[in-house]
Amino acid sequence: MSNKKIVAVIAGGDSSEAVISFQSGAQVYGCLDRTRFEPYLVVLQHGVWRVNPVDAAVEGATVPVDLNDFSFLLPQAGGEAVRVRFDYALIEIHGTPGENGILQGYFELMGIPYSTCTAEVSALTFNKSLCKAVLRGRPGINLAEEILLHRGDPLPEPDLIVGRLGLPFFVKPNASGSSFGVTKVKSADPEVIRAAIEAAFAESDAVLLEQFVEGREVSCGMMVIGGREWILPVTELIPENEFFDFEAKYTAGACREVTPAVLPDETVQALNRATATAYRTLGCRGIVRVDFMVDRTTGKPYFIEVNTTPGMSAASIVPQQWRAAGLTMGEAIGMIIDETAKKSTKQ
Image (cartoon, rainbow, N blue to C red; front, side, top):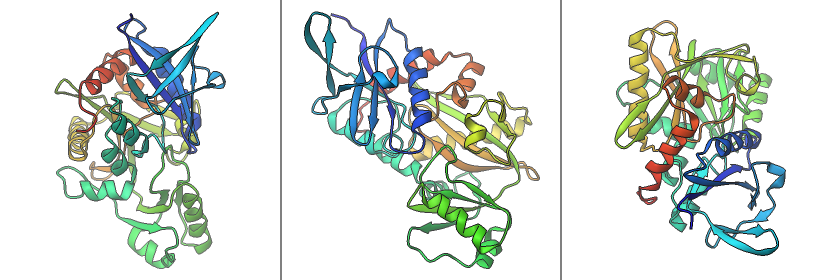
């Protein structure tokens, strides 16, 4: 009998980020060490779970998953199918239900170890405003001014918004990722503001209006393995567009990403401290990516958000940072599996 850990690489999801999730899932599936792991691609969308028993091609994922014990029947040539039960879940779903705690709750209930933050922490970090509220006042964490709107709330007067946030300002979904539904608003025109808010509400039931910080956008990856903090080299994001939107993130040539970023040593140290503070304060585990804007005038890093299921596609940031730190994706993912598999999912 093989002593390989049977790993479900879970991709898909129900948000606009599903297309990126499939790319991440395929990359991770391909990089896993076959001498240690026996991976299968599991596709989860709209409550339907299915497995590709052969390779990572999404269209080949047709075998249903038994959620009573997180297993599936593996077809055998000329014989009866064999039941395979997963030992571990490697979550590569960005957005719901893989980044907001829903999927984590299932695995905690089943006692199956998984790769990301816990259900509680995932839900907290997915809510941008609530995450900022928890970090507010922590040493080295600077936060932009914000206004939070819930669906059905009366819209504030444009003069009030501009008076508090200034121009330009950002309108973004409070619970989403990959910059879907994000608008940089440059005008106090009520119609412009209303359209931006509606675009954000298409992605989330709450919308964040946030002060614009003029500066350099950077991203910092971090993981803790065996008690050692791996704070990865900082990446600077230099988009062709006005900000790091979906096109800039996932279109070749639309953004120049510099890893490690060419920044003053004191700025890198401030970013490293802020990243570690956010990781510890929020109770993160596994690999997370924390995004900041470095104020062009003061040099202070302003916290934007934390990504607890960062992208693993060919164009993603964390794999670049692993390479700069001397790690392959396969090595890093293997370290994360070893670290999270040995810990209780109910911690």
